[in-house]
Amino acid sequence: QSALTQPPSASGTPGQRVTISCSGSNSNIGLNTVNWYQQFPGTAPKFLIYSNDKRRSGVPDRFSGSKSGTSASLAISGLQSEDEADYYCAAWDDSLNGPVFGGGTKLTVL
Amino acid sequence: EVQLVESGGGLVQPGGSLRLSCAASGFTVSSTYMSWVRQAPRKGLEWVSAIYSGDSTFSADSVKGRFTISRDNSQNTLYLQMNSLRAEDTAVYYCARGAVAAQADVWGQGTTVTVSS
Image 1 (cartoon, rainbow over the protein chains, first blue to last red):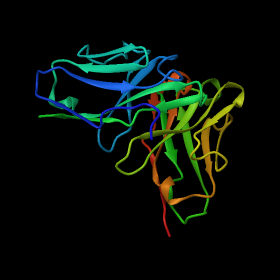
Image 2 (cartoon, chains in turn red, brown):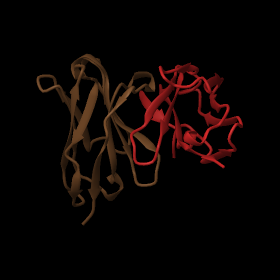
Image 3 (cartoon, rainbow over the protein chains, first blue to last red):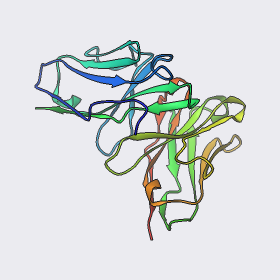
Image 4 (cartoon, rainbow over the protein chains, first blue to last red):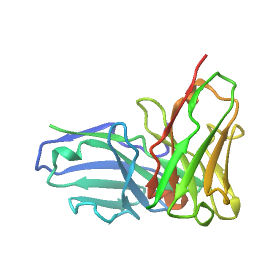
């Protein structure tokens, strides 16, 4: 069981706004920043959002991140078919003294 | 160009050992934090092991005492020595640059480890 909890799936139609949640605890999200990774089938993860809400260079501004308390969210607005992928949140865990991932959310564009 | 290339994966019997390598180019492994992340078939990502400055390390509970992360600065290469392998260690193993704050900005293409008799 992952230290961070994500819904296994999410979906939306082109142009819609979808949100993916990531729930943690006081030892991880409550104390540290959250990052988001995007992964397409058969490929390595891509570092998407860091420090809660900062987009990496080249990431469209349709992608945004936020954090409140022990939870975080990734929002994708103006959904496009190429956004269909798996999304993972990650944060440092002070109890484990190491990084942890969420279980991942499979985003389907209908 | 900043790049990571893993090698060393393969088929191994339960209880066996394997050493994964990750050759870095475009930066030096000695000057940054490095990680190994794995993904079992049809499963999510798991941060397996990381090495920090001063060579302090992190290992997930699932591999503690069996896997050892190290680096050879002269070869600019990261390693993962895996002993006492189990079927549940079957996964694609990725090498990544970064670990602290759970930020990994460069990833290799992955190498597949299959533990089966």
